[in-house]
Length: 199
Image (cartoon, rainbow, N blue to C red; front, top):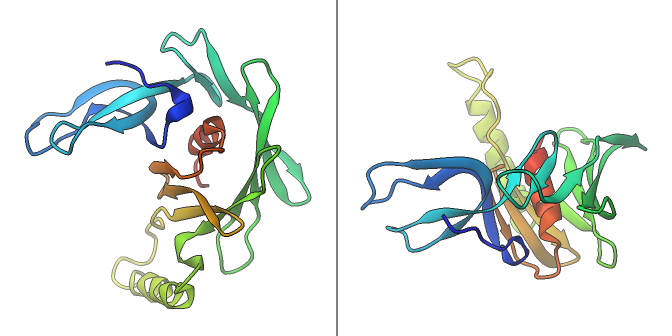
């Protein structure tokens, strides 16, 4: 399958499915684990690779792991934040991903710092607009889930809306699909967040 250039990616997922099930395709086709970009119509959908995870938190431009695309440093604790510096192939920093400790009853939040651009804040999708109603519905749903099954289920992955000021830069959907809306965002920072995962 032809590889997509990583610089132009607007939507991606990390996985090994090359050709998902569709109404006209009855069998899933698997490939190497990669950062994959959806292409084609709904019946001919393919997930083309653009980068390949290596050992640790690294991404390569080729499946043989010879051309490094970026790497993510081990986390460093600073002022209650867990910081991951993201580096280009030459080892130069291209940005920092920060995990901010939670304030009860909420989950942790995220920030992305890209030099020359405003701070990008990852918020729960229900945090804006009709946030109070959505939060109340989420709490009610959570309380209902504690009934018969005992409440030991893992929480559902959340969707984060990443904003710089009043502009949506990126949406990460429940730890799976990521949609980039700002052309200025360095794609490697989005890929790095997907490698880290929302945990």
